[in-house]
Image (spheres, one colour):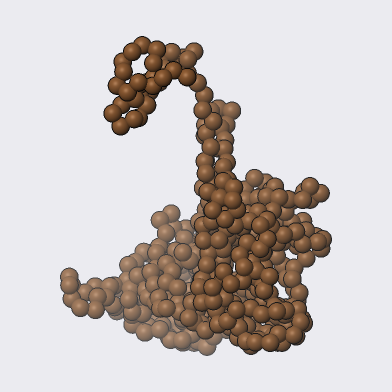
Length: 493
């Protein structure tokens, strides 16, 4: 190698500047341009002892391949009750609870013998699709005391069906007195453990601390990450076609006893989530939300579980009641549903819009996750009931009101910087329908209202949304009713 001379401008010699940086000029002649192998560092090897480098990919058309993660499911355990729409709970002596302190706790009642356990698994399954890895994340840790002999805490992908028995297929973290171990089990076969083993000793999982645990499941490798550091890997066994034999698996958490247990302790989880990596599937936000249990018809964390619609349970129709402008009778509460109202006489000047049904998006609290309610569509079907239309035709003018801070349609906007801000409903008119004279009991009105909102309606936490109706009849027939069905389409975000 030629001697480097500081500050030299001599031809044929390498030169450095005053601070000893090599002076380099890149060649401009194509034939002299070299090539560089591009690599990116996924992990610096702090825990595994080896740096993990991955090369990016370039398509045949010279485009650098790039992928964005798609969140398939996420749930935080801040509510004070189980979200039964998202989670299936199975228990045997050992129990779990969700006290409203931000976590679900396993071991509220401790198991004491082999076969005791408790598990929570998602109803939703998550597929491993071709080259799109699954990223499964938990915020979790030990809580009241360290685990002791004969007990383990599992969390990952799998379908456990018995409280005290682990799944037969899947990938997961296993925390016990042996430490924290990454594991893979394929179709009832033997458990394959990650290297290094264990990834952390039990003492290194500090009691009271919550850690971020991530499992990345790819076609040929499973990675286990702890607080952003790659902590262990499993190469897919050569006889296995995929990491797990099932095409899709739920996420789960499970504390079990494999023998006599001597003390009381709990493990806790603050959040669980699943993302699909790299490949963009092009699914609309509404599709992803619905798959994750966030359809507008479904109660969310901290809400009343079950359907958000009114009078849609397996029961009789609600009692007939009169509609009002400023108050909502209990039989008209719900995000849509089925309702029965007495027909009312009225004309343009004599009657207000009436609340046909009303729903409040629950206000956010520490135990209720504040979610926007995104309404993408609405349909209304009505029929004449109670009595034949005998005097004048009955016409109904329908609308939707949303965003008001109180149930009353008379709620007003406060002036600028007036304390305790309120706002009036924002309104859209939907259309009208008519029942002609002679319409018999059970005869539908002449048309349905079906509306898709290209620009969705957004109902923020604490705000109301209502369907409104204005009766346009000269004289209501005695005992005449309107039975109507309202269906909202939308999702929570």
